[in-house]
Length: 84
Image (tube, rainbow, N blue to C red; front, side):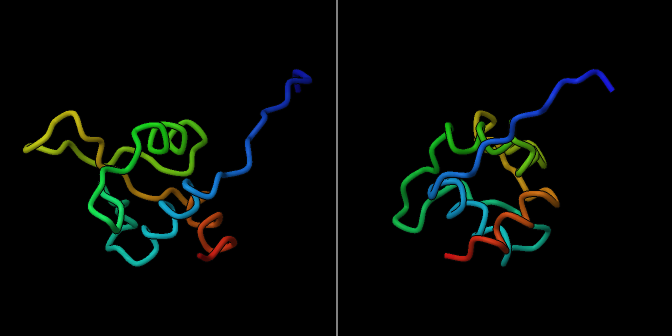
């Protein structure tokens, strides 16, 4: 043991809303768009990936700059613990 601790932030409301939407999708796929049709903030996506709550899943051939992600097991636990 090195004495280092890993700090994991609590998810924001926006992050939880995004993660919860993956619970009902095949494979835990997370949406690219909000319910109102606007794009999910890249900040939300990036921060969830960095926290280990989501992971890149596959490349989007139509829009290569969009990151298609799915829930990780930890992301699923957070989504279940924080229902909308």
